[in-house]
Length: 196
Image 1 (tube, rainbow, N blue to C red):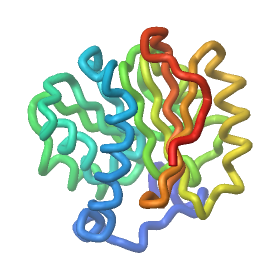
Image 2 (image 1 turned 60 degrees about the vertical axis):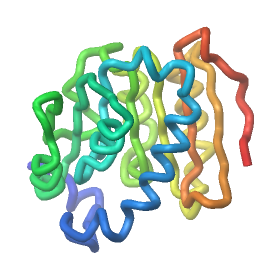
Image 3 (image 1 turned 60 degrees about the horizontal axis):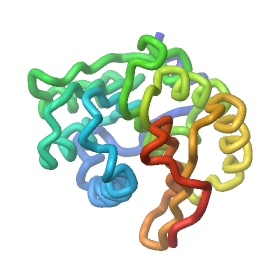
């Protein structure tokens, strides 16, 4: 089923899982760092992270280097990516083959939901609805700048589904993605703005 869903969406990976980290790893780490920097004051309260479109598990490994000792849930539709993620997993990881538009997670069960460089592959409205549904603390989304045509639709979906959550938009010249961080945490709330 996952293979047919990937094909129906026109999702094909031009880089095998083994080469992904080498080609994109450094760029992904910059995005993770930008997200963590934005969450700095609230990061200590994060115990459960869901990485939607986890690929090879780079975010989980990055969080481990920061001393994160909570539960990391990696979700991806591609089985070969999950096989690569298993090789770096430890006992605090759960890896699940699932669709981002139909997440097998309870509502408001995740402290940090991350969807990094994936939203452009999905139905934006369905995916944002699911990401917001499972989030109880923070939601970090990134959108490739070359797909900026989806920005307004993504922001409208966030507004429709996130309600009272505060939002920060991060635009940096050294990143290929626009980063959006939502917070349901009133102590860390910030008004919509851009950081260059």
